[in-house]
Picture 1 (cartoon, each protein chain N blue to C red):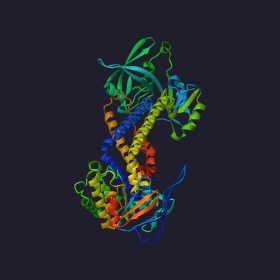
Picture 2 (cartoon, rainbow over the protein chains, first blue to last red; picture 1 turned 45 degrees about the vertical axis):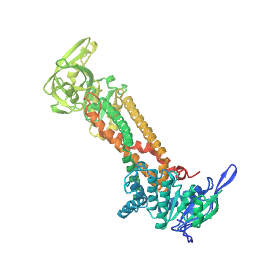
Picture 3 (tube, rainbow over the protein chains, first blue to last red; picture 1 turned 120 degrees about the vertical axis):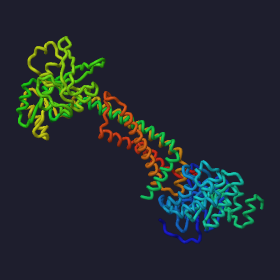
Picture 4 (cartoon, rainbow over the protein chains, first blue to last red; picture 1 turned 120 degrees about the horizontal axis):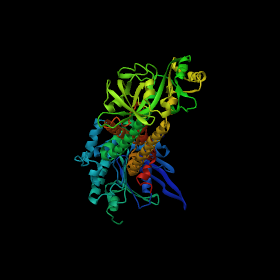
Length: 247
Length: 390
C-alpha cells in the first residue's frame, strides 16, 4: 500500500491526466484536473457527453488508473496502487452507486446492504441492525427482504445508497443516480443522498447530466473537453444553474 | 483465505437457492449423465464378469493350454497324461483338468429351455468351485452336478433336485439326468449360467461329434494350476512350459484378457463411458459459460464495490461443485432405484471400485467443464461491465 501523503481534504486530485492513443493521435479524456472535496461535502460533476466526467469518476472510484497525476483518498495515492490494493480501497474506503443494475439480483435489499460489511469482514449483530436502520431511514422498512426484481427503480437506488454508506467509506460516488427515475423520485433520491453525506461526514461526488439535481449539492464542478472549466460554489450560483436561469 | 471462502460460499449458495429451478434443471442433466455413466460402467462390469467370473475365481494362479492355441480355451486340447506331468513339476501344489462345452437345460412344464455352460472339473482339485449350499462333487464319474446361483435363480432348482440336460452327440439329441449336489456362488462362464459336473461325466455328457463318440481317452481343454508359492507365478509359468511338452502357460489375468471378445467388449464400453463423460463436460461447461455471460454486469458491480477476484472465482467453483454433487447424488439414487428393478438375466453388476471411479470422474466433470467460465468471470473488467469505459 502506498505511503500517506499530506492533504487537508478527504479527496484531492492533483493534475490528473488520462490519455489514450488513437489513430488521430493522443486523446486527453481528462486533462490536468485538480480538485478537492472535504469530508461532509457533496459535489456534483457535470458536463456534456465526452467531457470526461465518467472517466474522472472511474479514476476516483479506483477502477481506472490515471496516466499521470495523483488521486489522494485519505492521503493515499490511488494512482500508485496495484490492482489488489485498489480492490481493497474500493471495498473499504469507497461507496459507489451506479446508473442501473446496481444490486446483486439474488440478494434481498438488506442482504445487498450487508454485503459491504460481509466483504469487509465486519458483519456482526450491530452491523445487521445498522443495515436495517439505514434502509428504514430510506423508507424501505417494508422492503427489507424483497429481491431487487420486486422493487421499483427508485427503491433499488435507495438500497444502493444504503449499500454505498453502510461501511463508513471516506468517499461516496454516484454515477447518474437519477438516470432511470422520474423527476419526483429523482429529487427524493438525491435529497436523501445529500442528507446522509452531510450527516455522516462523507465526501460525496455525483456525476449527473441533469442540472436540476444540483440543487442539493454544495459545489458544482463543470467539465468540458477533459478539463475542469468552471466551479459553482455559492448557493446563489448553484440554484441559478439548477433552475436553468441565465446569468 | 477463510474469509474469502466464507463470502464465496455465501454468494454461490444464495444464488443457487434463489434460482433453484434453473440450477435444479442443470443438476438433473448431470443426474442423467450420471445414470448413463454408472449404467455403462455396471454393464461393462456385468458383461466382463459374466465372461471371466469362473476363471477369475479359480483358486489357482496359472492356466495350461495346448501349445499354439493362442490362449483360446475352446481351441486347446490336453489329454489326461498332461495333468499328471503338470502335477509332477516341482512347485505345483495342485492341478485340475477343466473341460468346457455348452448344453441345454430342460426345465419342467412350459419353461423355456436354458442354455448353460457345461464345465467338467476334477472333484477335489483346483477348478472345482466351492459350494455355498450342499456339498462338493464326490467322484469323477458320478451323476452329480453343482449349479451356479444364477442358474438356480433362473430355474428354481435346488440341492437334491434332478436336472435334465440335452446335448447333441453325433447327429442325435442325447438326454442326461443329473442330481444337484451343491450350489456355488457367482461362477458364470462365457456369459452363460454354468453347471459343473465331474470330469469323466462331462466327457460322457458333453456334445460330441460322431468321431468323438467312440474316442476312448477323455480330453480336457485346459489345466488349472495352484502353486506352492503364489508369488512365483512368472517363474513357474516358464518352468511348466519348459518341463511339460507341447503346452503354453498363462496367468489368470492373461487368460481373462484372451477370452473371446473380452478385451474388445471392455474397451468399447470404456470408450462409451469416456464419451459420455466428455459430453457431460461440454454440457456443464456450456451452461456455466452462458450463465456467466448473462451476469457480466452483476459480476462487474461485485468487482466495482471491492469483491476480489479470488472471491469471484471461488464462488463459481463452489457453485459448480455444489450443482455437480447434487446432480451426481440424484443420478446415483436414480441408478440405485433402477437397478432394483432389473431381473438377474440382465448383466448389470455394480462394482464398488468401478462405481467409485465413475463417481469421482463425474464429480470432476463439473469443475473441468466450468474452467473456462471461471476464467472468464475472473477476467471481467468492472469498467467495461458497467459501461463506464465510454
